[in-house]
Image (cartoon, rainbow, N blue to C red; front, side):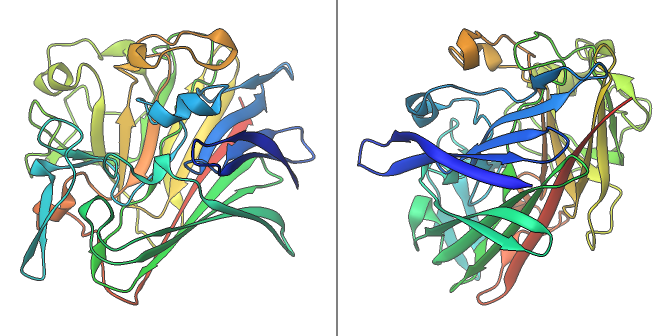
Amino acid sequence: MSITSKLFGTTNDGKEVHIFTLKNSNGMIVEIINYGATVLSIFVPDRNGKLDDVALGYDRLEDYYINAPFFGSILGRHANRIANAKFELNGTVYHLNKNEGENHLHGGIKGFHKVVWDAEIVQDDSGEHLKLNYISKDGEEGYPGNLDVTVTYTLTQDDALRIDYYAVSDKDTTVNLTNHTYFNLAGHASGSILKHQLMINADKFTPTDDKSIPTGEIVPVKGTPMDFTALTPIGARIDSKYEQLVFGSGYDHNWCLNVSGKEPEKAAELYEPSTGRVMEVYTTKPGIQFYSGNHLDTAGVGKGGTVYQKRDGLCLETQYYPDCLNHKNFPSSILRAGEEYKHTTIYKFYIR
């Protein structure tokens, strides 16, 4: 595996943004920029050997300044939603920036997806890795503690994109990091993902209210359109009158994974029949947010002049449960001062 870099652009405040190209000997290519630690492109072959980019995104740096869909970015300090943009820790109520109505979403107005990360290409016995670092200052977006965050991207010889997350804080705080790549295994410009087949390794999910805030319940998926315990076409039940799908205009929910959290275990499988492409997701996190791209028609012009439409891509975001800070029955995202936050997610590609 090799990594090269070139200039992608310069921010309004004069910071250089580079595009890092990761290649393996099988021909798989991943492009990442250090603005938002963002996955720009993922090129993988289909069953006939044709290489396509299966990640949605933009061609221009300036489009990522807005990036309403959060294309490809690392989200933090706390991914997903926090109700009423506040939480209590050690007897203190912390008020966060509101950026989705009265709620806090994906780290706030200037979350980790809107900052320039320091980048370094590092090498060890397993090959080269792209190491990205950002220091989030105490009080940024309302969060306590100076948080030192490192995200390491590795493209393996078996066609997997591995993401290793690490963080440490000098105060008790909350950390819930994820990557927000939108996938379309037929190619980023190929249209709807409704014929993709999805399996999620989860028997339960967390229902939400009409603002996508979890109610605190953890309920079985069996007998509902939320049941993806076997490979199921995404479009099979997405437009049913099931209340949760009405609230989200499709799927935008967290599934409670059947994983131990000790080592990366299989969380999901995505299959695109026309190309034969398969993507498996492995993680150490307890939850995964499946978002079916219900609002992609707000994305503007994407790569190659593509105008993305509703449900042209999907996300599989490994995470702590949404709003876990306000539900004591959910796994906790609290990181104590001096403790280490570690999390690994792997997106592995192959052909069927």
